[in-house]
Amino acid sequence: MLTRKIAHLDMDAFFAAVEQRDNPSLKGKPVVIGADPKGGQGRGVVSTCSYEARPFGIHSAMPITRAYRLCPHAVYLRGNSRKYRHASNQIFDILKNYTPDIQPISIDEAFMDISGCFHGSETATDLCCRIKDHIKREVQLNASIGIAPNKMIAKIASDYCKPDGLLEIKPEDMLNFLWPLPIGKIWGVGAKTQEALVAMNINNVGDLAKYPVDKLHARFGEYGIKLSKLANGIDERPVEDDDEVKSVSNEHTFDTDTRNLDEIYDKLLFLSQKVARRLRRHGLKGKTIGIKIRTADFRTITRAHTIGQRIHFDDIIYKEVKQMFEANYKPNTRIRLIGVRVSNFEDPYVQESLFESPEDSKRESMYKAIDQIKDKYGEKAIKSGHVKTHENKEVRDRNL
Ligand code: TTP
Ligand code: MG
Image: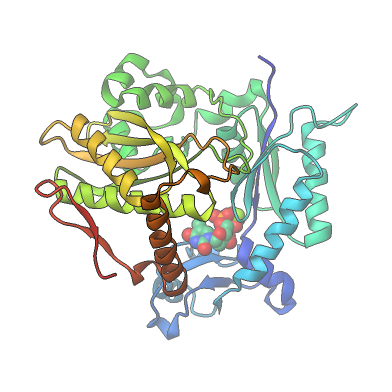
């Protein structure tokens, strides 16, 4: 297989860097963007901080009061999301000059497939150097870029070379780079998986790569095979253009593994509502409804059901996922994660109102009204509830 060249770009201290750019007196100072610390009494968290604030131990998502204790003399700013969005748009516009294969991941981060985008004697590193210079020249901000044969390693590389870095991991150096790293660097390995791996005496990526794959399979199911592949530098996921949304999904990991059906159905309802609302917001309707269930022993099953019509309604999605859950749940099994997915959008531009039943158009208006209220007054303005789901199968809307 032809070796791919995947680049992962991530801006440095993005929100803080925009503020330092626009106010030169902030340059070289610890700057914290987030909630108002109110002299140590504030609520809320840190969005990000400049690199000058990082040696104090401040980082994203930390309570603002803690940041204030660590560095009271930092400059604390609430931030300006319009300004950050504008800078982000400028950066993504620049990227489009270099490759059409861009997958935006967040406001300041994207994957790019740059295979075949550099010519003559130019290398992938030269091309990414031009991208960094272009952003610096036009937006006056620093980007860090990692280049590798796959997405996971490109992302690890950009993180590794921050700030203002550029690092290419060639195929022949891939395993030397990867194996000494802690297992937390592998995609999808969070605190719980890490704990389980350490208990198996797997401490770094090399240990994971060399561990017998059948044993990983026995312990983690399909996920174990994926872990082994990633640790061996195999990650074939393509860079996917975000414009072509193929599915909309949301999942939830329970704080503690649960067998409480009320809690599980509550979360399934919440996820169904979230997915449905996202579908409506993007003007999408799907025919295939799917569920993902991961049990406490890391076994994961996915099930999907294709229905007769394309929909974006909370109640239909919930009814389907609940049925699939019931059909696949072994009583008393503890659940670690559940997810809801809608796919199979076909042609989203087909004007469908001609084929809609009167009941559907009534439902359509109801959800439109709910969405409008939520847009105006926030997600919590309307609470939908279900009554003791395993006793009473009805889903109904309260507080309307
Ligand atoms: P990141 O790229 O995670 O962080 P960063 O760009 O500030 O710093 P780094 O150099 O380490 O990449 O996130 C991009 C922006 O997203 C960040 O500037 C602020 C915002 N953000 C939050 O608001 N809350 C968060 O918890 C995180 C992680 C980011
Ligand atoms: Mg960043």
